[in-house]
Length: 419
Image (cartoon, rainbow, N blue to C red; front, side, top):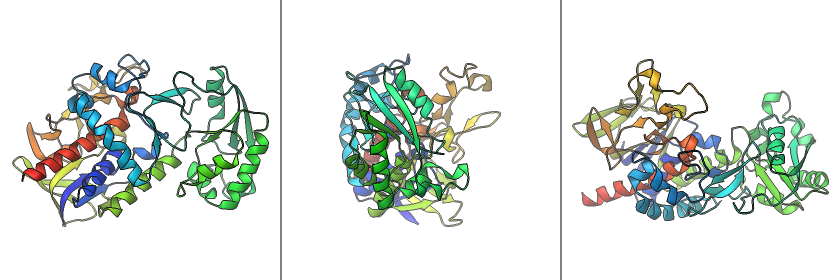
């Protein structure tokens, strides 16, 4: 099968790259083994939330200049990042995802621990707060469905109380939820979300929330609405007579899965080919070019392309693997930046910055992958498999995925126009 570009990995970086290229008229394919980090989505995309010392960042574009020269943002360049930022909102909007926020200044959201967290873009289901004001309410009703264990109300209440907010936790039951309560493991966010796709359940839920929130300034609820129906949250907000604020829960993330599905549908609508549940197991290289890849499911049928993109993610997505001897890329055995000795991979203090979080595939200045010391001129690397960033400590993972994918997409299109 012949394509213009084959992308390996179907998470945020892979889908962004695929959508951008397909919008330009390219024939693209994505090979995805399954779930991506979007299933852990908290409702927000971070650009840069914390500096190198762990302090909150208010102005992420300014702080990028203080990052290491090896960081993906610095390698893309601040001026180039500013250009790419203008592409993010239209791409998401055209796919059907609506976000709030601005790269010039971070806003606050409530995290699963009840604390305020600085971030860049937040999906419009969630409430955002001005850093100069914070949470504007002093008396909040924190509601949860009886038996739903993945929403830690005690942590949320404790976090809010530390900010001087009075919080009362209330639990409630509805007959609709009893149908899925055969055992505790079935009371998961995705199962609950499917119940809310029924109109009659929403109306009953709104009535219960209004009763329980009497005398409070606002209502906090777990983010378990709108798995397949993006209008559910809007209907609840219109029906409840208090401001509604959703709080992320333990994955799987309902807004994250919906975002993944929405981007996937956009890619397919543009003519993209999506190989779901498949993985690349080998590639055919000729000097400094990758000619084709073979996947587990396609067998002897090779996927041939002019360009290829690695978007396989980091350790959590098995884009990088640690053996007793080395850190390696399991797809093409590309060169990886890491410490040679295993003892140097981790810090004994688990709360410190871990060295392995900065590891990733080595690339040249144009984000071409390096294999055996040679740049592969048509194989690009994007997202969290890139080296030089600790996205967990920085709050930069989504920004790196989006911006590196857009940057590489432009590089591919420019390279094609020269041929």
